[in-house]
Image 1 (cartoon, chains in turn orange, yellow):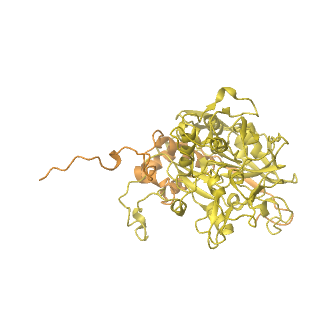
Image 2 (spheres, each protein chain N blue to C red):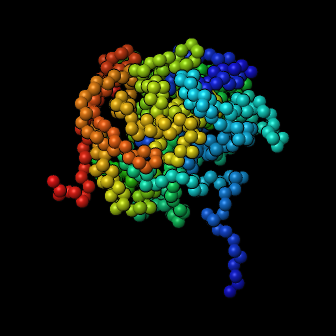
Image 3 (tube, rainbow over the protein chains, first blue to last red):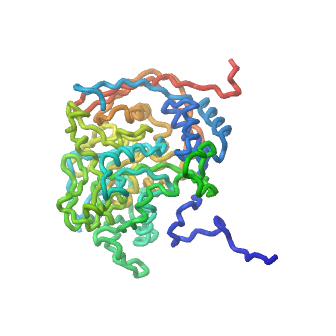
Length: 106
Length: 437
């Protein structure tokens, strides 16, 4: 069998600035997915969302949090949601909106 | 060229027109941390203002996922690259020159889009042929406008959605395995608009009463210099009318002239703000002093967040247009990226948000409780009810005190609109402690 020439494939290739699509699907250095997921859950908890509601945001394929759900699986996401909620609790607020002097908010 | 004062840059800068300021300024704060990218704001705007022929690719409000997305594609990377080419290595902030209200973010020592254009050639002797002559910019291609969220979505069809027609192609593409955040964008109704500066017809003007930037459709002849000149690419060309169009800040709502939704004539927030499901948006009108500074008004929520707490920052202040849209930066994004996008105060803003003051925490509850614009707010203090934990940028935890405070919002006539009370947080036990006492 003839030996294939050794060329770099796909993501092994280095970024070239003059490539018009170079910024697409190019990893961006830094960042921490675990930190991102933790912060997002904390945010939803501060808004008063429950475990099932937060998990639903990860399950929904139309939201980008779904990328984490796919990568990690439901078990890991659920566990993280529980851990964060146990630590932070959910902040709940009661709201009273007064009507316009002529009608409710439309 | 006249010199004007830009407080976001902490210095004077060149601008084609003399400095003049409105009495009040349309401004807004978006909390990036809470956006889920549902695009409800986008559709609210689209269905109100840009649903007609010739406006198919026109999205005055869009939400793009950073670091990949952009509408038009790569708008910010292209602008940053143009500025870097004009002033290699010189786009820097001097934090040692921070001075209160005059230069709260330090002094920007690089070149703005108005100053870089005066450099007709860069070091390689290249000229900027693509510019309008007054503002450094570029005209995006049609292709760059066509697909607002291309490459941003999870490319694979989920297992339980096999009935969907899409997903057959690209199923094997890799999904993004990196941090991201959603960036919500509308026209910033800048203090020194790039679009206004670039227009050769003087068809663009800034209203005295609220600082809203509008294109006079009678004067506009569709030269698209505003499309080139707006660094945020929020002026758009419409082929059917051969004029350019842009966000109008829903000014009939802002003026309180819609008798159906505001029978008592108080200003109402724009469609994109009012429709926000994630409760990330707050809009207001801030008082402007004669010299262009924001007149002190700590009861105004926007003033309080931008000037007192400094928790919300302008988007790419280095462009030099003094944008009036402010963002609470995402708390999980690498600091270098945030600094480039929001300026040198990004880290401090994130910390002020993650562990907010008592007043700030209360104010955060006022986001999206009413579509009437909140002109003032008051805090009635309650007792401490709990302690919670918050995760900082470096991953460390900090204790956050929760008080049973009440926050009250007021409309333009000083009447109470809404009252909120923070209730005791609910703690949910982790599975391993379900049965423990």
